[in-house]
Image (cartoon, rainbow, N blue to C red; front, side):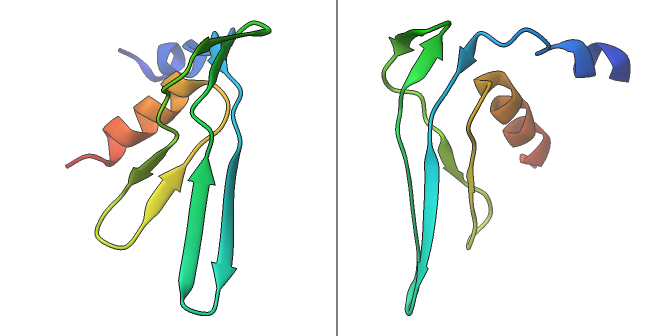
Length: 78
């Protein structure tokens, strides 16, 4: 697949929405996200994972189009 096609994949997102929050405190960081995925204005999916471990000491959280997040995770996998 060429680079242009990859960039055009999510111009019209389908599964969007969500919130991710991270709070730093004295002993570390806590990170949380809801698991909803909206299709249009309707909550369609109730178990979308928006936070994933990346390496031994890092987490990656994402909002918006879920396929973008999946592609980033695919690119980061070894």
